[in-house]
Amino acid sequence: MSQSDQSLPLLRVQSLVKSYGDRVAIHEASFDLWPGEVMAVVGESGSGKSSLLNVIAARTQPDAGQVEYLNHNGQLENIYTMTQAQQRLLSRTEWGFVHQNAADGLRMDVSAGANVCERLMGLGERHYGRLRQTAEHWLHRVEIDISRMDDTPRTFSGGMRQRLQIARNLVTQPRLVFMDEPTSGLDVSVQARVLDLLRQLTRKMQLAVVIVTHDLAVARLLADRMMVMQHGRIVESGLTDQVLDDPQHPYTQLLVSSVLQP
Image (cartoon, rainbow, N blue to C red; front, side, top):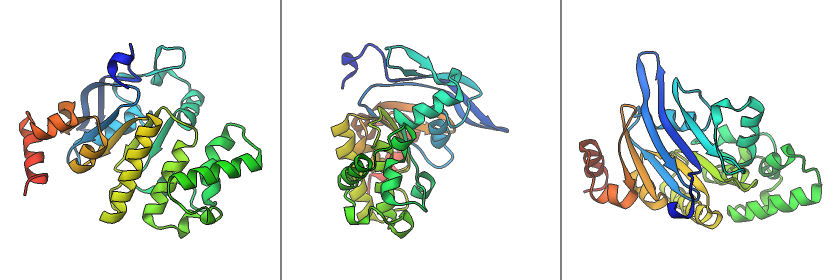
């Protein structure tokens, strides 16, 4: 969905600031995210990209600035003025969060099927047959054999755990998903499979996504736009191919030359 199709963005980030002691993790970060748009946030370790993700996902409070989310009444609402109950409901329904370590986003001692359906059960769904059918549907969509439905994630490989975490987040048909290095730490072949799955699902479901990654190849594959962070500042932003093929900021030029060129 293009910006011209909407009068307001799905997410509006304005002048965010976050410090940890003397270290400024985010300095005056501002951007809009539109419905159906995938935005990559890239930079080296310590650049502030994960801090930014946690603040805009309401997992951490900023020191200054605000994040507004487009509610179903067509109005931008400040997520930090919501009650904790409202924030929790939002995070369990319209938002998803895919962790780098899948174990952080799964209940490791309950079955794969229960992991997939937990968000639905939290919204009041109790019909066992419908829950089971939904679990089957989503396991199939993320390429996990339904014979593994009653197995716990502890018995799964790293790639399977990550795909299960993706299903767990998407079962409520969210409008916005946050992803923190979702393929980091996976073997190259497994990483490619997970990336292909993410690309298919984001396009088919018209998901808006903010994805943090240090891997510029991941950004090129998945993201419509990208932002480059250095020392807590957004130093460059634009269409992904444009930024990667013709970087303007010296730091972006350094990243591209060191990673994408032989």
